[in-house]
Image (tube, rainbow, N blue to C red; front, top):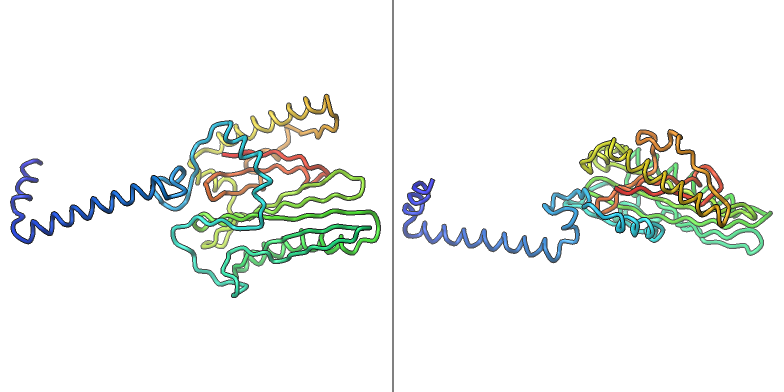
Length: 291
């Protein structure tokens, strides 16, 4: 090998030698620039060290995961975060707005006697049949609810809706949170998620994201079972002092990976699983699992 290298170098004479040296220097400069960019300027260097585009997420400590869970509500700022190497060209529904997700309905209205509505309801700004199908579900779930509340003439209802969206390469995750407070009933907090493949025009499953994260269904199931049981035990301890225990059924099939339908992928490559019990009951209780 050494002899072959010496023969190659010895064959470089005149202009060839200068061209080789110039090329070698350029390669070193480019490698140095890439290293500096990844180290100091590439915001996803911890989760995407090879800049392949789709972040799979770095491992976090239990304390760091706890901070992410505590900051969950602050995610809903009615915006979209994009992490993609090559923007995907799509046919827009609203040609005047280039975002993949927009605020389709902004309902802010109040009647001091009957209701207060503050609903920023998103819409996927992609002109495909699947995106339109998702938009129709969003309109039925949130816009129609807001309109019905604004026609009420009895009791007093407070309704708020906010959202956040993320794009990882072709993966669009849209998360919508709604809070409903009707007269003397408990606050009802619901969360709906939609995980859409822009290129394949289909919805992703949780098992698709498990493959993204290069983990296994069994490992994720273990995390779910552990976190939900911890939440169950903590709720019982709190209820002993303050009452109002929301009873989780630890044997329920809703906690199975294959039955979990509320989840999303952040721009940092972390998957959030949400068990929002307000999706069915009058409660603001929810459990978050992050991996």
